[in-house]
Image (cartoon, rainbow over all chains, first blue to last red; front, side, top):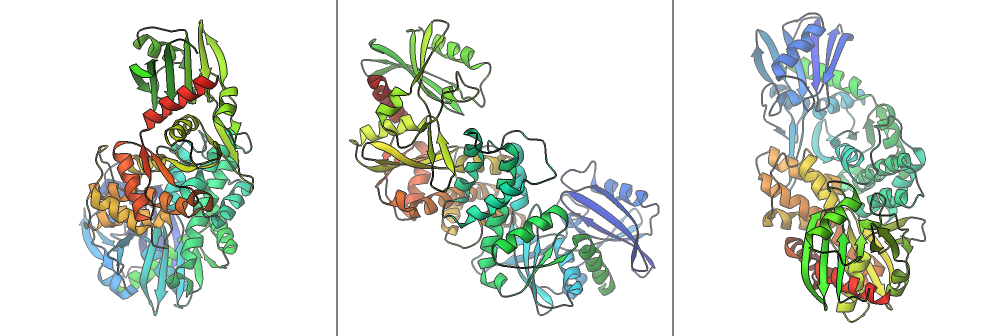
Length: 297
Length: 297
């Protein structure tokens, strides 16, 4: 990609964003539902998105679920440790009706105990985040449906772990017997959230702590809104408290890649368990990461 | 209830069972979907069930969700500690079209930290289980959608805790991104279950341990069936390992009130974390418990 105008994309499970970049600045963007919610076949979705941007430059660089099974083309996971150069070299190029689409590979990490972890898209945000931090060693925390904790050391991603906190929260709020039928809420009950965070100090199983969302409502002691905040606080607290205790996470300063309410919830959880993180905007990290990978390919 | 023929019922969330008892023996039974799945208004469901038993004796004693909001009549929770006599005295009697229906109250437990727990139906099984154990102090473990761990001391229920293990397992198996679309299975993959149990020794959050059900499939290292067994093992192990560490649970011998595959899974989990429980059949416990409450009213 050498043209002054570039098209970058981040194709997530829930959101598909495409940016038009000119001279390093975002000159246009479009957002569609992600891979799990999208209407139509991935190639058709890409064409729709490109058309909405008002012009096909003929080249697109995209990260995330574009390279997953069911995406544009399945691109193998690249094993950790991986540098930005390793990732750039593994970018897959496919031709879609005359448009060259370059797809960033996801990463895998195999632990010594034989279990592995996977990511698609976050590796690009981490590359951007590392650039924005001057390349220093850090633990990058990327909350979401499948939250990632990534160790960045000596200029590369060496290890990571995923917690399905966002998905679990959505499942429990929408489909469980815990908090009853509630319209999705864009705000979080602060008292409930704080109580959920604090109860992570107890020895009960998470599945028992969660049940109080039901029992405290059944006995009329708390509201439905409280229950939803409490569930969020329990789940985010469970993730943050335990992750912070892992040696490979604790030894580097935390950097939170998040925005809006999610950023505030994680900042509160990190503070509750003794950490203060630098905050970076995820969209900014994605674009800087795509710039970096683009420059290396 | 003094008639030689009695009708006893256990109206759960998933199953509604009615038994005809004559001279202490089950002479007939009927099973319908429980409160969450049932067709029609509760009183109509009760009439259907009684008609299937072939004759209305005019008196029914029923425990469980019959006394919940949305059941036959809302019966307040009785606070712990509670003896069988306390429970018998709090049985609510309602007349439904000339049929006297006696409803066993559920129990609540308020912990010193201000959180409470609730049960409906299990108190009756525990009364039966305690009778079958000769009234000795014990911790009764009742697995299920909302698993209960109940401390029985000096002839009464003094404390209990609920883990939503069964519900969480069903949610993750049916609706999550973890193990993909799989037909419900009546068997559990033994290797997956054992691996899930064992991984509870790790310090990762439960929400991270669960994610391996996805990542190990995405990388082709494990099957969908393995993933389902692994999720069950993780969740049951998380519950059992942590509950066994609680002082009020550890100080009394465990008695498992379960049957079939669920009993085998919990026995395996208890053994993994150092406990061996006596095993009692839940239906037998329910009937013996209803007999005892009936005799006290």
